[in-house]
Length: 326
Image (spheres, one colour):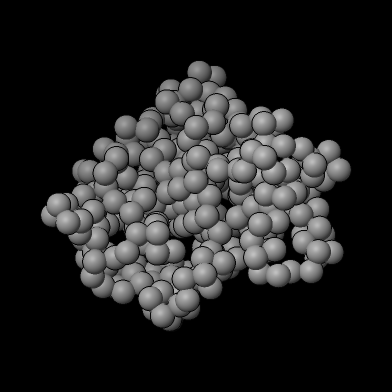
C-alpha cells in the first residue's frame, strides 16, 4: 500500500531528519510510528502526502510514485488529522465535514447522507451536532469531528499526527477506543504518530520505533515487548511503565482479564500448567515470560487461555499516561 524506499530528508541547514528509511505499510494496517522528540516521526508522516518534500529515495502508494500523482489527487485520497484540529470556527459541523466532498463535486444528497453516517459512527447524534459550531463542542467532540472530516471523502489512507495528545486522559482513552472500533468497520490504512507508549500498544497492528531519523525496530506490539532489539527499545518502553504491572493501584487478578474479554476459549494444553484465576497479574506476567499461553483454572475447571497479547491489551487499557489507573 505505502512503501518507503531509502527515503531521506535533509534540510538546508544539514540537519538529517530522516535517514535512508525503508519500510512497507500494508493495506488496512494500523501502523504506529513512535520515538523520542526529534526522531523524525512527524517528518516521515508528512512526506507521505507531500507536505514535506523528500530529499532522496522514493515513496510509493499502490506501487505508484507519489511524485507522479497530481497533488490534489494525492491529498484527496489521504485523510489527515493532527493535534491542532483546525475546524473552521465560522462554519457549522456539517459544513466543516463537507469541505472535501464538495471540492470533489459530490451530489448534495450523498454528502448529507455521508455526514449522517460519519457522525453516527463516532457516537454523535446527527440532528444534535450537524448545525452546531465548533465552539459549542468539547475538546473530545471537536477531535471526533476532526477524524470524521478526514474520512468524509472516503480516502484509502488516514494520517494521524499525535491527534489525541492535547486531550485530558479520560477523553484520550475514549477516543483511542473509538478509533479502534471505527477501524474495525472502515478498515482504512492508518499511519499514526505518537510519543506515548501506552497509546502505541493499544492501537498498533505494528509499531515502528525510530531514533535519530532511522528505524530501530518495526514489529508487532507483542514482539517488541517480548524481544526488544536493543537497550534503546527496551528502555524507551520501560520509561512508559509497560513492563511493570506493580504500578497498578488496584490488585488486579487474572479473572479481571477474563471479565474484560482478554482471553481465548480453551481448546487444548497441559492443565498442570494452568494458573488459578484469583492469582495476580504480576504472577501471570512472570508465567508469560516463558510460555506462549497459559490455561486459566476456575474452581478446578479450565475456562480459557491467556497469551502475551491479551496481557498487553489489558495493561494498555488500564494504564493512563504516566502509569496511573483510569
